[in-house]
Image 1 (cartoon, rainbow, N blue to C red):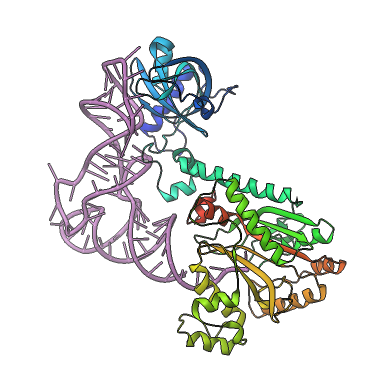
Image 2 (cartoon, rainbow, N blue to C red):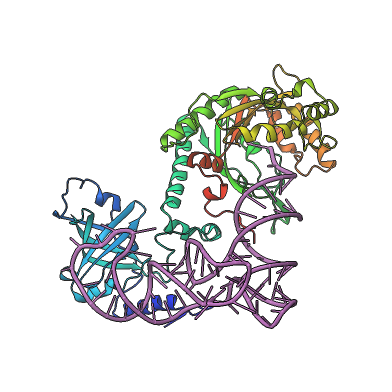
Length: 489
RNA sequence: GCCCCCGUAGCUCAGCCGGUCAGAGCAGCGGCCUUUUAAGCCGACGGUCGAGAGUUCGAAUCUCUCCGGGGGCACCA
């Protein structure tokens, strides 16, 4: 018998290897190429509610899945077969199968992938069951599965070996099915409303569209450094300039930051841009889209996601939370005084600039206390290099952020389309970068030239998919909703 | 980067106030059984107690270092 190189010889592994060898010795291929004609277990079990305990049928089904449990041995055994759609009890009888196939069936290991032809009936104890007429090993499992009762709970194993989590825990499978439904529903909403999906570069000569540190990589043939995108914003707006009036892209962004319950260095974001819309129209669309997605995927959590969502200015949100009126204190010194005067502690009132202090107030005093979805609107210009000046409030821009359950889930604005103003914003960012701000925007002349070509009035937004999935599945950690989250090495 | 907590059999856990403390259930192995279903009954196996160093007559247990994980802080469109 063979033992995998580098593995400590183990009785558990050796026993499975021995069975594998026995199958081959008996002329049975433990890894056949296909098993056509399988129906989902849920299909085989549907429509039999009327079947009485002890009642038989002649209805055959062909199912396949992973062997999850076995009860009883000898001349009759019950086994549980699991596929993505559900679980089905199998009954194996020696008088149906014959002694040799029965013996081989009893030698199957939990975790083996098995295909079954059988007849549906209800046992005396009342469980819908498939009587095994014939079966085939479809893939021998050479490693023991996680505990089938307790499942797999060790967090490290669950994240590093997600396949084990998936095969051991139904909730894990259901969650990622749900995630797929959410993404599909969102795409459907955008497709149905005239948006076209595009793909823009992940590897970018210049990064932009967000305030974040990028990952840097190197292209050998071109002999140049490239950045992994931190946002799709600038490319998408170039698409709008080109006449793709409604565009979206749903994909991964990468930010060179720490990990936390709401941060993963690579994460999924959808951004969409709509010509002739402003930030108010974009907010309308966000709340409607999220509401429809929630309904489409069967969301039934505690938070009410249906529109409309509350809208409150950043100024009001901060004031109602801690009494500080940031618009009444428009310079650093004055705001610092107000923060101290309000008895708030832990603020770096010496080093932080006015917009930075406003941002601090938002993330510390407001964001953690938000439960129901809310749009916070009208941000300081300095924090938003791509948002258009507010039509009536000097020093502010037409920007919103959507928050829910203590997390930011979306950020959008009336897009800045005045190329000269955009140039000035880049220059301001350059000054910040020179002053040591590692998250400042690099100057993107190609983008400014695109704006010079003429971009219609446009509203745009970025919506965090991972966080949306957290929201809709009630998970507290982004790592629960990302299949293979970043782990310390 | 800082602070706190965790790491015992394939899986889920107990033991941890230093001295039969190497334990249980499940899985696996052997035997029995034609209606089981938290995993039928009986039996025998199975661990370098995350790694290393130290204290001690004696360490899973106390101390330190390292590794891995979790939580919090800092940071974080």
